[in-house]
Amino acid sequence: MIDISRAAQVALEAAHRASEVVMRVYQTPFSVDYKAKDDPVTRADREANDLICERLAAEFPKIPIVAEESLAATYAGFETATESWFVDPLDGTREFVARNGEFAVMIGLAREGRAALGVIVAPTWRRAFVGIVGDGAWEVARNGERNPVRVSSHPTLEGASVLVSRSHTPPRIAALVATIRAREAVVHGSAGLKAVLVATGARDIYLQPGPAGMRWDACASEALVVAAGGACTDADGNAFDYRTVDLSNAHGLVATNGLLHQPTIGALRAAR
Image 1 (cartoon, rainbow, N blue to C red):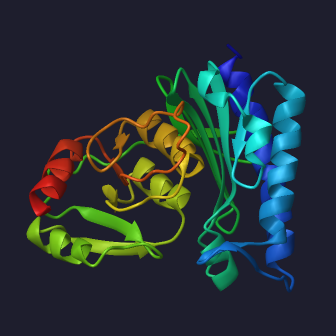
Image 2 (image 1 turned 135 degrees about the vertical axis):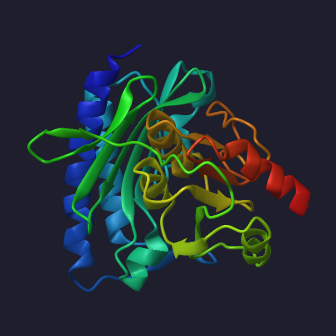
């Protein structure tokens, strides 16, 4: 296996460079294409994808790179690999198009089918985060200075702060938040940014019980939250398997401070 500290450094450098590409496009007029209904893609997605994949392939040529804007043929066989990269070059393209600033560059590394490393750069926030499962999570300044981040210690669903998707929030979520007497449901774009808010303790729960994107939306997010002391599973409470041929997060995504994970899963089951 590759040295995970080296992997984190290379991924962070690649994410920063991709972030610069994303912001150059963001600050100029750009066109929007659609891969499918409600699935936009821009030049920023494609250029950032190419940049990240080229850097990772040059440094770690034997590791498959499962990237959103790459052809599936380029990562064929990843499901049998010991390690695989999962790349979302522009997480939150809808928010990018809406120009509300809620988007991120995400690079995750899975080992033996489990999230091990997460790098998330928030271009408009000018902030970057790295999580290594079993080692810790940090906000990393451009000069390399690392400041540890940690999930919240809020102990009960009552009064908890819940994050929900700006683009894909089922109507029943508002009712669920009221039922568990959570403090609020905060609407936010980008799975990666919502993971950051949980990992840094700014929010207690990120709740997406319906379809929650793809594995490249989950890998870096999960690694960062877990490295910061939290928990992340699908909405049934099952661990994400990064060796499955089906890359969809069809059963949702729940990220919490850990203390609230089983109560949150239980509340979702009861609500069904």
